[in-house]
Length: 345
Ligand SMILES: [Zn+2]
Image (tube, protein in one colour):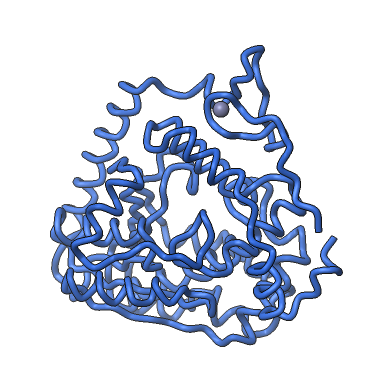
């Protein structure tokens, strides 16, 4: 399983020449950097998104046990999101972690500490291991599972996992009548300008059949339990839409500041999750598989976006983008998932 890291990188961000759709000019600057907004445009855009987010929060607050279901991994970005929504915007949040079987011990400690310090209700959901491990095995072996756009932003195993988590959050929102769902996604992880998204539930129910069918044929008969939103739940909830918030896009804070602000809540950096994650021990495996199939680090787009937004120095970005997953970790992860590494092309 060779890992390629010798590609030419953009001289401004760290996108490699083999990233889909990337073109370099004579100075070695990529098309994304050439089209990037200026620092003042970024500031204006963030300020506008922030105003829109505050308006969405105010419009959807109150009257229920929970205003917002927060997809909470225990990692730094979702911890910061939970802190901001609770302390700065006064939302009643339910923090929910889906433990995929690879949650780091430190992330577990962090999530308990942070939710306790913030006085937030916390729910941990652990889907059956046989389903999760089967889903990951299929994600590695089936290249048709996710769209070409999705694999630019995350590894196949991350995409499957995120899909499962998203559906679980929608189910909880419907169960509790919460009109908001929030995640800790940062720039580059989700499409541009998605700090606030309106999820029209009618359209959602009509358009997800194709994905559900594809997942069901790959992941087996339990798929609906994890990836379907039952019609009956929708009827009972009597909701037309859910507003999805990605507050990090409207807050635009860098890693150092995030870690500094989380420290008083008892959040500590994890040491066992590789250089691109602060919650999941499967992450390096996803990166290794992605390198192997596509030849680039699945985090390189978001890392580059952080550089363009002035939230990360190119030096730090280079270190993250070029970090090769520890093969000891990858072997342990493969063994845990019962995947023959030699059989991976
Ligand atoms: Zn660039």
